[in-house]
Image (cartoon, rainbow, N blue to C red; front, top):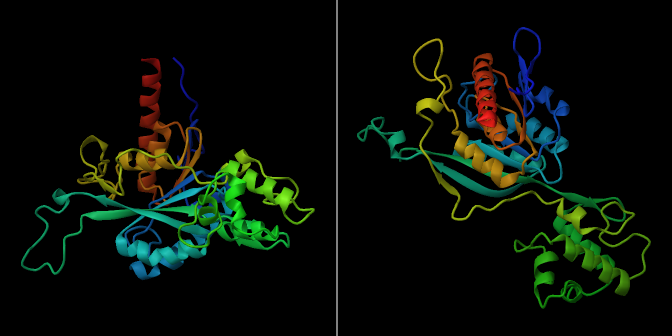
Length: 348
């Protein structure tokens, strides 16, 4: 039967590559430049608990810790890249500034509700001084997009759109006629408030044509992306982060922590190998929502690499790193087992 190619570098098993995944035991910062540019990044890194190598011992240090990673993610990403950032509520609050300052735009927060069973038997009602915590959060960001004006200055996309129209000398109200609508284009595409809406490619093409015909003469095409050519609808649409809507799914995800056969046990003793192993099903939700088959997924803080497993199962290509050799070995075995199961499904 056909077997997918699997290669291992050296005898210490510190790297594994299959047809859909490439994982290493090491620092992700040293890998970003080697990996293919991502459509989606799933970050499940330090929570400020001091449990893993190099992790801050409080949430106060998380912003400084994440800043260089956030900058590298933006540097090596595509304009349409999405970031899912896992953490505790306070951990994300302390980290948000580092993400925002280094090229990431907040979109929404998803709450993972693990259910009351998560803390059953572990709460002393006589001594507890707050509400039992049964949640974590996964925050969705998209890469901040900037475009150059006629003087080479980079402007945020929302400002750039309005600037391009104003460059024509035409009143903003004509944008409605240009796009063939009564009142939606001006208040959606050219507004600078929170009601701004990313215009579809055909609207950009229409706006460019209208300004060219009725606006001031210019040697630089209106709404040009490269400074030379008029915009094309497909080219413009490709700048937008991907999103596939799932009906009836809200921003509260109710699922118990990982148990049973999915939970990786410690081979050297009792208990689990990783204290916070994420359910593959939740990672699949994120991957399906923000990428397409064949796209590249990054998991820079792999742990047991649930996002990588989810990516492989859904026909994406994954790149992952994990510093802890014990966690990496557990993840490596998971990936090999996933490949075996995939091969068996292919011949059944």
